[in-house]
Length: 308
Image (tube, rainbow, N blue to C red; front, side, top):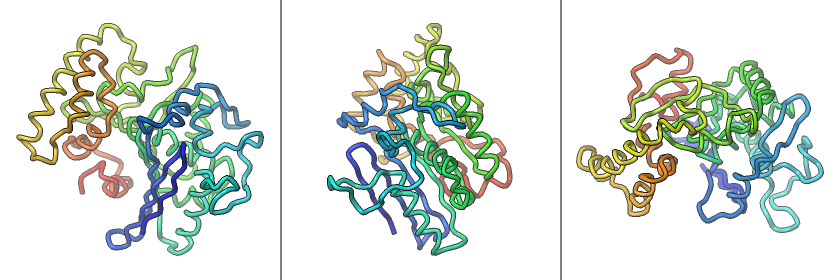
């Protein structure tokens, strides 16, 4: 069973495979579409939206999730299949309603939330608004938040609020970051922009070797001393594009557009590293030799971070 809710600015996919694992529901937010001006507007809207008691959050991401103009985040809105402009309901409200319906059918069912890039930002903001609305019933059924190439979403107050909420409801939150990917290093964590990351960082280098960190290396991507090493690494990634299919099979062959992006990376390191391909390769080929907390292993196995 799957559900697909599409809007000009937000796309989400909800999957429940009853043949494989009927007790797992996956909510996946799609990242930025290259030719979607609405998505780019969401990404580059760096203004703050402040929620009392929670902190300041990236306004563009909030709007993409379903922030209501002039109303903010009311707990309920008039919820229909579509609104008066024949547009789907806002992502947050639609997904919350759908999850309640699915979870009511199976008291053992749990759900995870995930996404890449912009989708990763929406994935962590979704439980934030659930907490703001005191949806403890849903949060208790949330088995984890796992993001890939996710940008920062809030300030220090938001970070502390979310740490408390995730701990309260025992929700694991992990950010997967690949090598020099520039997006997880944006917006900047400095005295001007004041954005902060939180959660456990699962970091993969260009050899797909994994480390567990609190923050990705070179957290703002501004270290000039690392520019030349990043360019050399981009050259290795281009060469690797031709090696992987020979070693691991044709399914690792990269298309012309990605190869072009690899070439661009020779001048702009960190741009091609954000492509989903390396995140897929990292989960397929990456090392997982360290020990996770025992209680989380089964959850990680379900979403592919830890091999079964």
